Amino acid sequence: MESKLLWMIIGMGVVTYLPRMLPFVLFRGRELPPFVQGVLKNVPYATLGALIFPGILLIKNQDVWFGVIGAAASFILALLGANVIFVVLGAIGILSVYSYFF
Image (tube, rainbow, N blue to C red; front, side):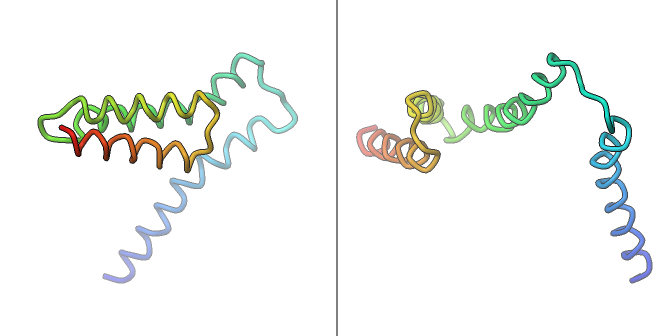
């Protein structure tokens, strides 16, 4: 059983290492077009948005506004240039006030 587990860990390591290593090997010495660079720079934000958005709508059982207000507060604070910790604390504070009154 331990041999099977060891091979599984090695296999998972190879599978995660290959996609990280191949771009360095294949594109060594080449520069990507500016459009492709722009797209790749936005992938983390798009992925984060895709992961967070469903949670905004389903954060509380019957109260969709709870998630919408929290997201709006976070978005506004981020647009104002607040630090990430202040964005999180601000959204928590606004949702605490909302929970108290509603």
